[in-house]
Amino acid sequence: MRFKFTVSLLLFFVLLVFILNFWPLSARTSLPKKASLPEEAFFPSLFGRLLKKKETPIIIVAAGDVMLGRSVNAKMRSLTDFAYPFLKTASLLKSADLTFINLESPFYDHCPTTNEGMIFCADPKAVRGLIYSGADVVNLANNHILNYGSKGLNFTQNLLHQKNIDYLSPSGNLVIKKIKSTRFGFLGFNLTSGYQEGKIIEKVKEAKPKVDLLIVSFHWGTEYAEKPSLKQTNLARQVVNAGANLILGHHSHVVQPVENYRGAKIVYSLGNFIFDQNWSEETRKGLVGIFTFQNKKLAKTEFREVYISDSYQPSFADNL
Image 1 (cartoon, rainbow, N blue to C red):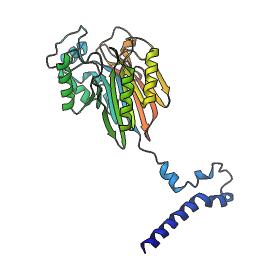
Image 2 (tube, rainbow, N blue to C red):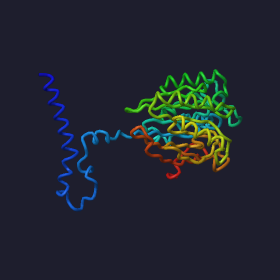
Image 3 (cartoon, rainbow, N blue to C red):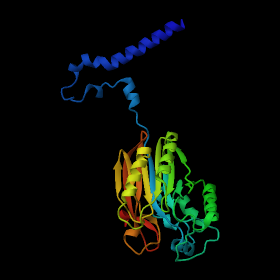
Image 4 (cartoon, rainbow, N blue to C red):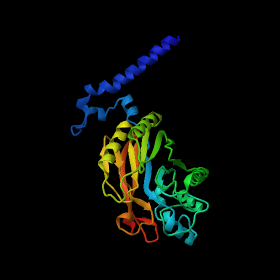
């Protein structure tokens, strides 16, 4: 009895597929003359409709260098407002499904107030700005995160952990974030003090099978250079070949070109986002990348330009 039922059910599905796929061939004369689209557009197969179902878009927003130390730190303390640098941009950042930044300064509980020097730190209260802007993943693999040594790094990582903000440490950990039905992987590398290309490629290849889409952050290149070097370009393409879907670059403090390569985007530098380098027009500019992913692919890329005010607060340039 069960065998007969199974056979009947199978015959029903075969008949259904036959009707959906072949019946229109005998009825094409009944279509309106103006219908010039292929008949499968009018009579899609049952399985075709299921396969073509689109997933809900996922939006990831990425900002450039965020330095909450030195004059930025002094400004926040003078205002007693530790979300101040993010006030004019947070609405976009926190509207995304995931927000990514490069944090160029460690948090430290004994951080001095200063307007000079190259040793950066930020008041721990400044983490409120990250929370207010909806930061989800923070890159710490850069040349300033160890300005207060391992103690400063540990303090920063513990604080971010307490606030449920994931981070990419200098050790090269993989962060995986599941958004809707898609697994995103994040890797961060500091390339400012020497590196081995082979180890980077190996880490990318190890990470790729664990996720659907892989985003790699590079702190690299020459400061204030308008274009990436040939070495950067070659490495970026190798990393895409190894499995990266999006590369986000930092460190030059100025905006650099964006390259399309094998369906991936290589953003060589997003420039500054929050910084106190007001001594040139180019270092006061940056980009916020808006990346739309759909069906496990990067479907759309947009950029919003920011301009940093005299008080170290970025605004969107089209709103000035």
